[in-house]
Length: 274
Image (tube, rainbow, N blue to C red; front, top):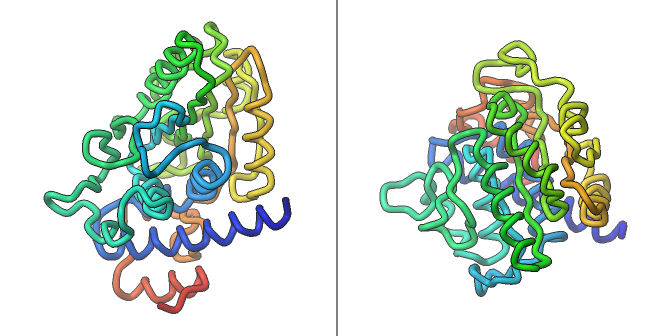
């Protein structure tokens, strides 16, 4: 397992490099939330989820919903690494005519299961997928990554209530809890604490982890799959902009990309000199 974790950690580092290069090239997109979520996305796509890049619509696949759709670069670099499309396509992020839009587009991008971007709606869509799969007697699982800022949306809690009511134990929500949103501290804009207590009160199985500790992420995903009778929320404490000191814990880098002066230092932080 140590070797597996080390492999995933190295892959996450390389995915961070790809995120920084992609966002620098596009000069449009979201840096902080992409870097904070990438360890979880990496663990899902390269360890936990069943999927087939050669057949994106394979019925046996697990489903993934990036509810915090503005972190699309984190999803795109993982899909490219898997082989859903050429890595060269990443350099077309947000370009006119590109299949890599600013938010995930299931109609244009291979491997994207659902369009997202309007915050607060992803858990409802994931819940619908999970319920449908259970009604069909399928064993597929559904994973949704949410930001802590979007928990301010009331629809999240309607979905949480419904998922617990219908005992959707094939649903796992991962909360990217970096404590910042575009307007500043989540606690000051609209305090959502305690996230764990809230999901627990709605009847969910709750697991608290360090969202950058690959061993904890893998263990939590395994625990979530083994838990029966209720959905699981993995509340992951993360750092916005993780991996690059220029961007870490800075709300100003929510929707700002690396400029020409910042790129070399950002890549140096990530162990890349290219």
